[in-house]
Length: 297
Image 1 (cartoon, rainbow, N blue to C red):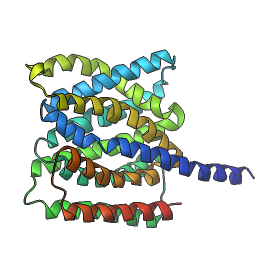
Image 2 (tube, helix red, strand yellow):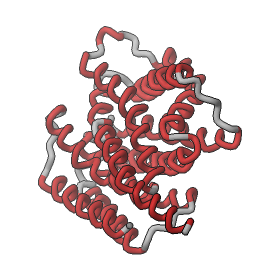
Image 3 (cartoon, helix red, strand yellow):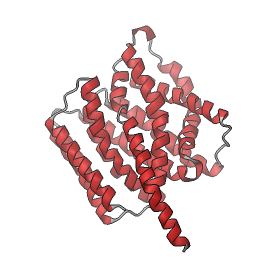
Image 4 (tube, rainbow, N blue to C red):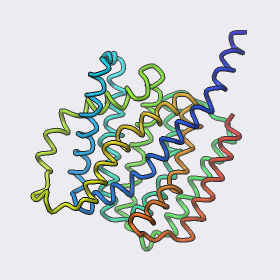
């Protein structure tokens, strides 16, 4: 009887997990275009430390106002991993990559993130998705890899390598943070990870501050504001909650939708070219998401 009730509760959490995960993906979809806009007027290093410091101060304020208890010592290792991957590693490497490639090109690489997250979910969280899930997850990732190879002649190898490294670190942070959020809470995980990073990020702002702040365009400041508030903090609240509710590997497949929304933003805000190949790959990725959601239950 207990087993049946638990299973029923787990099943009921899946729709909520997918909804929260979808909201997180929508917010993250603007990250790469906004980062591209920011690095057009600022150095990738300043963008990385500034977004982490701004989000960290916001997170510290929320934690103090709500009088949240400090995480247990046993959680510190996981929080350091989240901070290293999501607060420092991915933002820095993706910002450096965007100095060599367009945001549209980088967004297609984001299609690899669900597979990487699922792998870390198995290694770190003990999840065991069905074989059919892996089939569609790998298929979606192969679409991304195939597109990258096809575009390889015109793309930057350095930019691609930086994006791949960023995705590995991000997938690790997603899986570790989602596992920890089951006990600590979704918004608490990213908040404490940001606070842990503050002693390093705040001094580095003065090291990497541009010589002339007045020369930076309003668009670049707005891009920095978006990735600081939404990509670095608000988006994670929904994302980690969704992963904890519906499963890291299964809900993580929603990340395959991020290129679709991001490409639309890249074309609209940056007037970057969105080719038919990009759209075809994105459509294939969406089909893989739908199938993985259906067969992963």
